[in-house]
Image 1 (cartoon, rainbow, N blue to C red):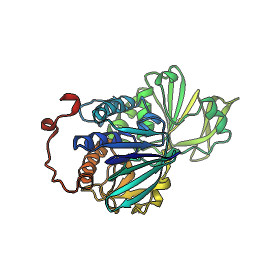
Image 2: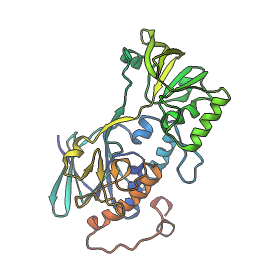
Image 3: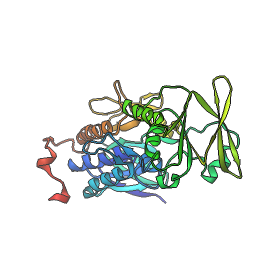
Image 4: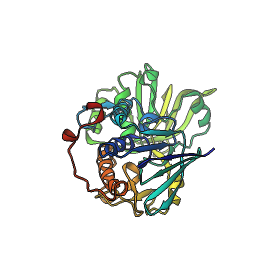
Length: 340
């Protein structure tokens, strides 16, 4: 059954940048509908690492991902966004010279004046290590690609594989609850923030973390999906077993744009090219913000996505209110409905 809606802006993606875009649009009196393929808001923050601390949010020394999403939802709430969760945008059609029709996989058709794509990595899933019998350990929870609750790993032997920010951040976060933490990486150098690398080095020097480098995953040992050990192999083919209740491989996400790739947008591999001054795409009235966009000097930081959300909202104004001149106001003078 097809349901028709009308709004000013459709935001594709309910992750942190999408939620902040609701606030920025609301401050400029633009109504928003938000569509996300997940059944909940928060994108990767809630789906993959709800308890992971995030350190680059202004005003917070550190904030858990799920807490950040809750704050962003509260910030957006006064502007009454309409959420269409558990559905994918399958089509975006030009209705006339001044409006779009966004169609979702559940038959919702949303007419709007502008579209802001904040779809993160697009359709995402973990890069899985090529290990025999992996599925049985995944089903039992012995192998996982996200940490839902840190307490689930208390007093457990944990092997974390990977050398990027996600792997190192979880080492730093879980070392205080786990019995042992072993870190497997194929090279001595880690691809993470320098401060995190220094903290990891200090933990290794104090024997709180076992740095298993340069090694890579070789096989899993256990019965009926219950993990007992992870076998790793060095560059010379020599193996060793690491006692393990859990293996957490953090090899990044495999992502694809899905239907977005067919909309005629200018792309750079799996990313949407935008004008960095406005986050406008090559198609009038469509903007892209956050991890899904691409431009020279792009930094994949949530804080940069917040800035892009503000720029896209200002860019969308001309399509929503083409006959009105916008007089910029700071939030201190404009206020928000909840504070009125």
